[in-house]
Length: 215
Ligand SMILES: [Zn+2]
Image 1 (tube, rainbow, N blue to C red):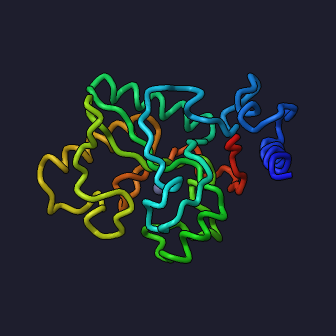
Image 2: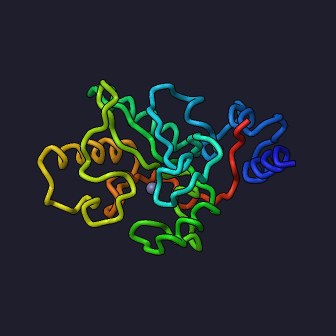
Image 3: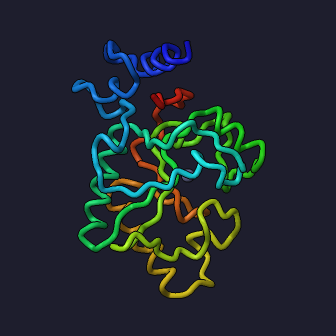
């Protein structure tokens, strides 16, 4: 029942094309996918590094809230991410991913713990994560080591802000590298979180609560 329900949910949200596949994974690979179709990043590139924090208990919820570590986003967000990563790879870096599309129910759990719109979007409006247009990321070097961004991911304090200046030049340069390249590839930065990027063209897409298939 859970299986068919998942397919049903994906079919519902992907209402512009027929949904005949036997799994959500296959649904995403249909050739008729358009820019707003939800797809899995790993089907489009093998060049990303993953550390999906919400598929572990290593996050501020202190709970594993995803059944498996997958990065689903709308196709247009995937295209922009692949382009940004290509730019970073020319410079010897890769994008490391902490979070991608996030079902609305997870947003509600986050808001209960941190009801502060500087750090967690109010689920009554929905986050761009819930729209499949936001990513939480950092950069790793050729050895896979994270660049120093000054704080950990999901550090809810002023030190995580792009406007915070009391940082070493190296950290400022690392944040600038991440921000400049992401903006050049169609994303907006969020002032309060150095790791968060919204695809500009995703702001008006619909919020979703669909869960991805872990089979
Ligand atoms: Zn985010």
